[in-house]
Length: 110
Image 1 (cartoon, one colour):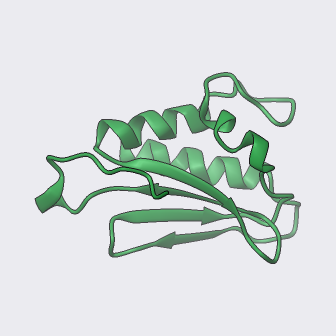
Image 2: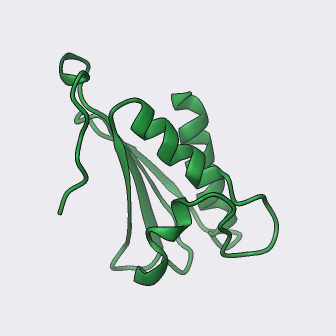
């Protein structure tokens, strides 16, 4: 399931990054993985909605990828976040507890 979550995040970044630009994958020792794209970013008003089923910012796709990411994160006691980078693009992250703490769910910051 975790592989599917990361794959969906990567596919989302590739769909929203202009051709010829890079996307980055960052994996933290804190149990997080982030995908950074060079697209237009995610407007604040849409940041919660993009994780709902059947939501799409562009044509194509079913609008299920990010909702699956959110469900997988929550099923493993984690959560997802989205923000924009100062130089442009979006950063979507999935966060998990370290294995020794996995019995209690994480709460999103803020």
